[in-house]
Image (tube, rainbow, N blue to C red; front, side, top):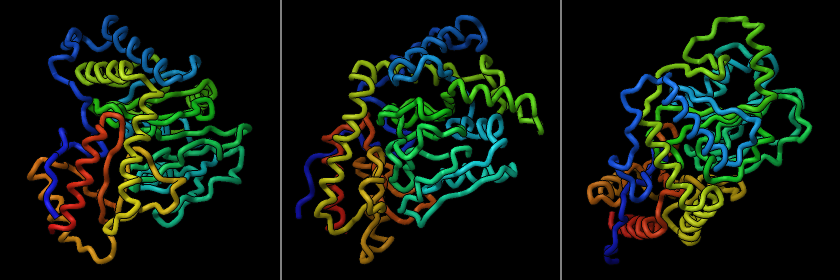
Length: 363
């Protein structure tokens, strides 16, 4: 078997932070607001204009509010756990490591929590949830290449709040925002923007709960996690990161926006799916196609393949600038994880799969 002749134009296949858009450049970033006071009218208006564009591009309802938080998606989710949840029982849907982490955070505050989980690789029960419970779930878990993929399993008459970590789903899925009261995400996933900041999308129903919790305030909330003042920045944001997000958002909009992002992600995933049809070295970690993620595929080797072989493959691909960071999440089983979001080129995925085939033969 001869080595392929074409290598990917970019070796960045990490599941987060992800590859920058083609044509991205530091020189293209708007530096007009760097070095300015972050609460000046100019900077706040700059941020508001970006968030306004974001709402339009993602079709977020006008009555929903966007809040910028520190600490990426982790900071955003923990701010919700501290600031809003806790007054009702919570049903946590756990099928990946991030869902598990959010459940641990909820339990650390002694909230009442029912954890629904199964053996890794399988989706827990997504029905018969008490309508009065709050629901917390990850839409797409890149750690194991799984996703709930929709909100059809949530009743239209659900009374409790629905909270979702949509980091690896936003910009790549048709999210029914009106069925989710609180969504959290970071922008370094789908668009390849610089991270550090988190976003909270909050419904009027959730804002009312926030007001109620603020009145009760049974325990002091750390300032960094307190979103009770919706119109105030919690801490000093990086205007450089915000400007980078603006650049990537404009690229996404020019490409075709949400409909383009959804289609591009599906096309990229299909390349992996078709490659896997006759693959004798690897299999999808999640057997049920219904619950596979289209943004990040997690593939595990057959029993005959040893850990040492995979290590050699990873080392070779990195040394030749063919693929960086495709090894599995640090807590996950041994395997290969490939990002298929909208910044990834189809020709690069095809080249990667050809090199993987050769590498399994060679090593």
